[in-house]
Amino acid sequence: MPDFEDDYKFDTLAIRAGQVRTAEGEHCEPVFTTSSYVFASAAEAAARFSDEQPGNIYSRFTNPTVRTFEQRLAAMEGAESCVATASGMSAILSTCLALLKSGDHIVSSRSIFGSTTMLFTNFLAKLGIETTFVNLTDIDDWAGAIRPETRLMFMETPSNPLTELADIKQLAELAHHNDILLAVDNCFCTPALQQPIGLGADIVIHSATKFLDGQGRCVGGAVVGPKELVGEKVFGFLRTAGPAMSPFNAWVFLKGLETLSLRMKAHSANALALAQWLEQQAVVKRVFYPGLESHGQHQLARRQQSGYGGLLSFELEGGKQAGWNLIDATRLISITANLGDTKSTITHPASTTHNRLTVQQREESGIVDGLIRIAVGLEDIEDLKNDLARGMAGGMA
Image 1: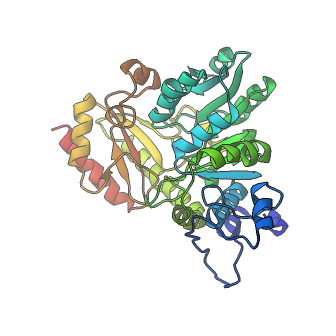
Image 2: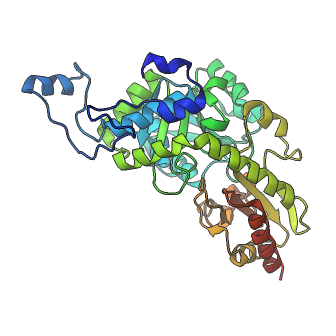
């Protein structure tokens, strides 16, 4: 990126970083909808393919719109490099296959997305890469799981859906003391609320589908980190294997980044107000949200995050049937497993996002049958409360 961006603050980077205007003098970033590029000569083509000369070759791994998104997100995370991918899951897969080999070992929080658990246990295991799952919040559990062949520690913080937090700085120190890489999925906070690299993490993973987009329009992912790890090794995997982000999706995500800081503050304010209201409802056994003083890691959230995010969950009296009844009785909140949208969404994790886990795995992760997850959007907070109140009345009928 140009040196002049070094002194700019976060909100300015979110709007300006990475853009290089063409000869047309456009104000908005263009979408380069091209699969290939024309070379001035055979010699130039040869120089590009041999990496002797920088420049565009093929949009699977070089596209100006995608590059602008990558440079902007890297600047916002305080990192050297970013590689954009086709989805959040392909970002995790690309990271693992680029940096690990058969015989290596991963220590992962068990409080991660169900598909990530499946990726580790069902597919990386076939390649000889083993995973040990540990309690996200227990540093001794992490330390006890480390082996001589451990190469990667992986976690989401806050976790989905229980909003548990890991002490990133503490885990980074543990990882680096043992010559291990620490990867943090920053999907739920985004760099607007949390910057793991500044706390010692080596790699940051994103599902751009969520809050980076912000309006539920496109699917994409990203890997952010040092040039050697991400800009060379992860990029090398993407260049060959091809889990690339489309130029149009990159353009949509660029527009999302421009309003990210404003949206995350508004998501956080709405979620806190809703969480406080939920704590007062008789049918609610417990509310999980880091912004609440009742949250066991509220002080940690205050230290390592600048806001508490838009994700919360709560446990209902009455188990699964009460949860399903509540969801079905709502009229405003969307019943969908996606999150990070301006529109609030509601889901029953045990039967949707975590349904492929065994009963034991769900129990170990705290995904009980009465648990409901809400990704709080930007609607009027009173309308959200009223919709849930209607749902609670229906749920307990």
